[in-house]
Amino acid sequence: METKIKALDRSCLKPEDFKEAVEILKSGGLVAMPTETVYGLAGDAMDEEAAKKIYAAKGRPSDNPLIVHIADEKALYELASDVPKEALAAAKRFWPGPLTMILNKSDRVPFGTTGGLSTVAIRFPSDNIANMLIKTSGLYLAAPSANASGRPSTTRAEHVYEDLNGRIPLILDGGSCKIGLESTIIDLSVVSSGKKPLILRPGFITKEELEEVIPGIEYDPAVISRKPSENKVAKAPGMKYRHYAPAGTLTIVEGKSEAVVNKINAEAFDKKYKRIGILATKETRNLYKGVQYDDEALQNNLKKLRPISLKFKEKASYGSVGGSIELEDIRQHLSLEEPVIFTVGSREDDASIAAELFEALRNCDELALDVIYSESFEDGPLCQAIMNRLIKAAGYSIVYV
Ligand code: TXA
Ligand code: MG
Image (cartoon, rainbow, N blue to C red):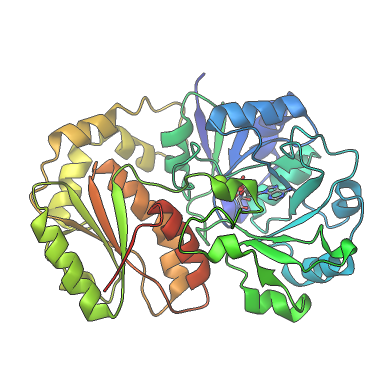
């Protein structure tokens, strides 16, 4: 299957921009779309066959339920069998936006979409492309993150192409996703039976913000755990799988900044015969020994090795841009003598760290790094969301200094 990429201009979206995407969706096919969090791989949520295609394209286990995307709050009453007052309060405050609510499903929602569960995950995205796609198709769109299962979620159309080229007919390119981490998920299906609402996945909307409208909301212990433990089974099925992982071995180093820098420098020096990466921040990047990822010579080398990717970036709208041979080329031809230092945002604004984390993990794979060290992120409103992803990507490998 040819995968076409269609670049859209957010400032002047027209119904014609969505014609092809709507035709594909209505005939049961899949379209990748941008959202404010990450790219989603969308199909008709009421069509079990479309759900099957989503699982197949991602290589995702089919017991892992999909989020249903809506563009009008009233859809809650069609998709859920009961809508508790907490859901209405959260919708009023946070929708449209990066919040997903789990509610008891109505009979209309097929089990193929919910992974066999009697609950359904519902989200009303704020992204104007996603919004218009839902509205013009007149469908509810089931959409998991548009990455191959296990890989970091995708925050740019190029990343979607990298993972799903040949597996889906169309990617709508809306540029970089603003938030860069997936939505906060809360479980409200339990409140009717008197149980406490839970946060199943931390995200851009924080526990503190949620507490303002849902007093007493707590984290599912599994999502903030630093150790994989049998007695903490994640309630969101997707949280139990290996996730977000780069191909190389990632280790988080946690402690005071100076100690972290010293430890990473020592480790990176020790193993310099391997291809090593360091995830740093604007504040610490110059304290590490190695070459910066944004170094001009390194980027020029990458560009030379990446003619196909380049073509991808230069054209506003394009058809199929070839296979992923260029990644293999880069791996074979780029000699890396020193560790590569990636700048993942700034500690002064942890939203910038959230926005850049998945791309940095993907860039590690592009350079075929074997060993990666990352700083830890303990402060700031988004630290739970960031660490939740990073700890999974590291397979719980954390060194304390
Ligand atoms: O920001 C987002 O939420 C993105 C964009 C595309 O909207 N979507 C996304 O979907 O991250 P996905 O499928 O990659 O992650 C959805 C998570 C999975 O961990 C899944 O197990 C959980 O939500 N989930 C979905 N339905 C559920 C349900 N009924 N009960 C518990 N967990 C559920
Ligand atoms: Mg996902």
